[in-house]
Length: 302
Image (cartoon, rainbow, N blue to C red):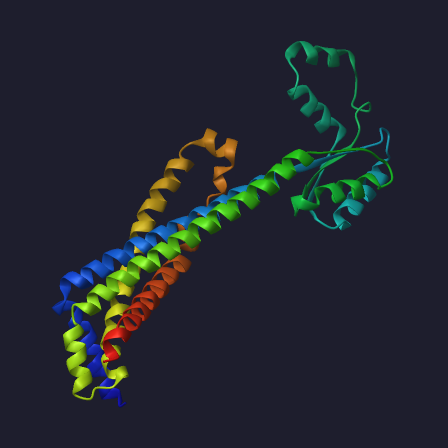
């Protein structure tokens, strides 16, 4: 087929949208709602996963050295910690810092005891260690405990197990929701495109009887579905942008909630808007085009 032929069929597809405004609008609305359902569910999962990852980064291992460990050996232990697998960051906690942290956790009467103690030598040097993968926390804790001059290692293995289970449940639930919504959306889109094609079945059959090829018949429907899907994706993007921005601002405006649940790890829309836009446009155009072409099969076979 010549380029002029493709241009003619493309023009026919765009023209069909105007001629069949009601069916085109119905297809647009169904595609828009379907894209929003799946897109919002996917964004919800991405942010839940980001929040869990943020909590993971805050899950620390406390390492205490033997009291009186020389400064040279303290530096050597820090170097050994950084070389271990699964270590993300090692922060040195001096005797003075350890004492200040201890005083911050007790009341004023308890802090009065330290008025009778001079210096910091009774406190051990230590490290605050963050890890990359909380699923390996037990193995990492054991490896740290094997280092010479390490007196004690404290890690919240129960918190780690909870975060692992939370991530697994979030993945399963989000995956099931996205799959279910995708299936429902495809059924809705299929029924709508079938109704659109059915309304023009006589036109298709007449074209078939006068010798038009399947490609010639399907191409306008392909273009029509693709253009409708493209505009549906554009609409879904701007609606998602508005909703996402409002929700993001609402949570960020609550410092207490942000600190308690690590909401600060919600991804700003500016970081993902290009990906979201491309995803909406591609999925909308492809689903619209393929759905329209498939729906013509029954009426082409005459």
